[in-house]
Length: 441
Image (cartoon, rainbow, N blue to C red; front, side, top):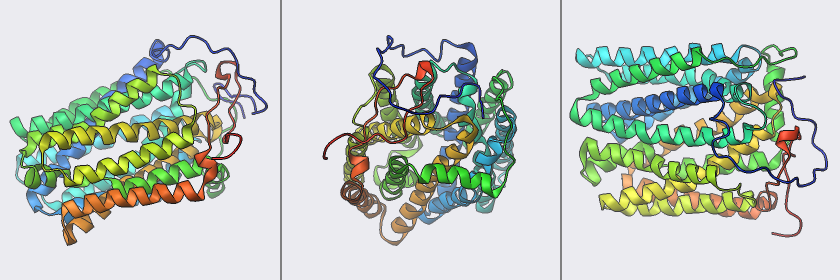
């Protein structure tokens, strides 16, 4: 099957002379710049909305358990529909899928604004809307990932992958900070208004996109089509190992769901401090994302992945024990930097290793791992904190993260030895999914 630009099958590849690295190669192309602008707007909007919902739920309930249940409400739609969403992305117009899916969060924030201004907020409303948001994301995310090669040239595609990660980090920094400031100065209803404005801008940007057509027949949505995407990942052990490592590390090591408790009860910094604390993780990720755009690719990717996940776990332990707001912000930034390396390595491997006819389905498998880690991590943190304390939940989670790294280091030497080799993307050559380094560990 032929796509907008299909790489030739993998084979022995000599290391070519590399062209001069241009960190802005993708953004110089107007179609991709429009795509990136829409992605930035939607990333700010969604993280702002998530922060506002978490704050309002904790204000209403005062319960760590209820915060954890938000994660559960997000997880079940991801578990049930992400793979279907990937198959839909490979069989239908990806631009239209993204466009239609983005109207759902717009409607949800309008509902929350109406309910908040009329004092009609009840916990079931939040859980129902979070469920709808997760369902929409299950279709939007694979389609958006699969749309990238249709709006950027082959030569700039590797750069677009890293730029995407940088844009996402920028949005994720701005959203929680903006949410915290709006809640603190104007009230949570203003945060919902800001979300509606940002989503409208994102919808406009997507509507103006002119993606290249994907050539060849599309495969209809079916169980076999879904299975094909899962099989692609399952038979590439380095790719599967990287996803699994990230998933379990975040399940044990994530502290995001407990940030309202840390801001309000432990550090006692209120909604403004909550906004800064929420944004500090993504601020660290943004710093690292920019560095990864500018610097040459990490070659010893497997070892770098394991080391950065270990640093993520250590940082989580320190954050859990901290009682100083400034130290907590600094440590949370450090955690974000470590996490960003993992994100970029995983996304680069997924995108460069996947043919276009499978791109939506493979992206959905990756999204399933990400969704499982984020939402199950929120549930785990909330439940453990409810039974013990927030500090115990975060510190033991960091220890669990280190245990996962140790197990993967011992059990998956292929991942430990994995290296990313230079590939002539511009000439159409496709990298092998796994390239272990020669020799021992």
